[in-house]
Image (cartoon, rainbow, N blue to C red; front, side, top):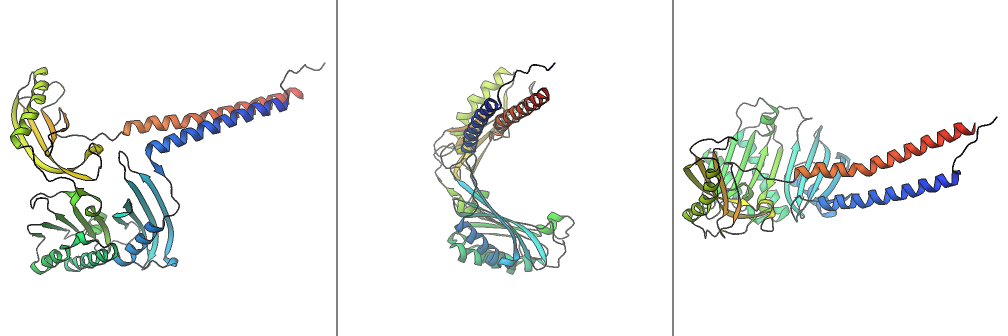
Length: 375
């Protein structure tokens, strides 16, 4: 006797599967759009301006042969920077030059050159270049960079490098700028060879203050390659030089916060230190996160450490308008960049994929079962 089989018609199963697939595709597409919009991600297969500038930098500033036959791979990607209105474009190139294979990364912000980095992991780490040879490389690179990018903000850098060569000095300073050169005499690690010399040129703020966001950085390897070039002057700008809040006023603003915390934990303020610095607009609190503002850093030390190992309190205050940037029971502040949310987004992104896989497996098992029953 044949067993009675109760099952849906194949056409009904196909309709159900089609409906499920349409739903999952729609949900996945909608969620993916929301995910990438949230993170500001844009994938670009080509960008003419950055392409030309990147190759121009390699040929003229880094001194490499960039003929088509020497470029082994080329990739461009763009995305909106986290907590920012700026877009970053990353150009990655694998190039063959002088019997070596190099991995190069060049970064642009809103179409402006920012960072060049040369990976020497596949290059034999030997060389006999001297300090003078390496400084000559930075001079040539600066001159070529100025011409290629019309970088008038570099004016004065070549003259200070020349002064360093002439005076055999690693520090050159004037009223407007400061040049610092570090030199590894005995290279023993890959980083030593890559950064045989490391040069940092600061443009002073108010003829006194220096900050990395207002500097140009270069490194040259022991074998004479330009391995790093960063132009923060092209991408960052000083938004204010006004100091409208005095040191005393900054302390008076800060003390109530520190006292309130100390009272809860049986502590008292023992010492108070203040520092005036220029910093990037943290977490885009004032709009452009590449803008630089003066900030008072008020650090207060308590007479003892409390039950949670807190021994002080810190307050950051914009020196031009008196607004508090942040405060808390720490001497050193940690910037929150929203990294915890990344795990949430990743978990949610996996949901439609898991659902789709589960539905397909269920349908496959049902189909196999129906085939066995019909037999």
